[in-house]
Length: 245
Ligand code: NAP
Image (cartoon, helix red, strand yellow):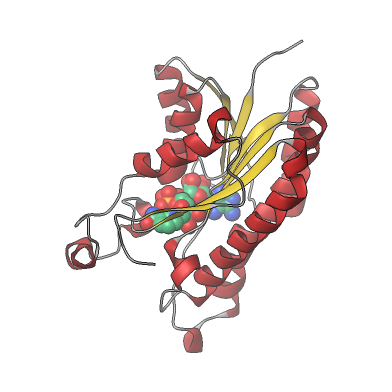
């Protein structure tokens, strides 16, 4: 019987997700690195895990596609009959910014489908194992945009605010079974998602006077995923260099 402990990180191929994969691997988890398209980046994450003597697996699937998730997780369960995923980090996300008056249906739906439906499909599927084993950690990667609302991001703000609402509701449903559900709300973090932003001018409004690093988000996620955070649930931790929310 396999006795590895598993963690799944959606969107683990790049940016914040990659940093989270590396942290969880250092905590002793075998990390399932989910990605959508970028196999080269996902393989690089896996290589970095291996280089730090960790273990990992790749799982390609679009988190907004319920059938794809069922197929990928069903296959994983078949090949790992004695295991369950005890840490789930819902990190996959996209931006499709536009002023609401110009926003296309696809921009609205793609962002909501990835962040919110992705959370729903994967979490529902993996929750059973956590509840049965009476242990689990779910960490949802929300955003400052979901707390404060940012112009040009009605779709993204709505998706992240909804994710925070779901975090708080689910936390209360599953707390009796020792499963915690929390969120982090990063501000501006250096990654592919923010590479088109003007850091030089934006950093002037951040008290820390810089963008954050993916590792700085990953450290908070790792704490929430640890045993030490057992009494923290339904919480949202801002990681934003003091940017007022
Ligand atoms: P990123 O560098 O653009 O990486 C996005 C990741 O999500 C990639 O691994 C990508 O996979 C994956 N992904 C996107 N759509 C997916 C889908 N449908 N199914 C599966 N995987 C999918 O973004 P990031 O900056 O690291 O952001 C990570 C999370 O943090 C997101 O939820 C984002 O909203 C949130 N966040 C970011 C910031 C920031 O300033 N960067 C601030 C607040 C919140 P592929 O590599 O295959 O494309």
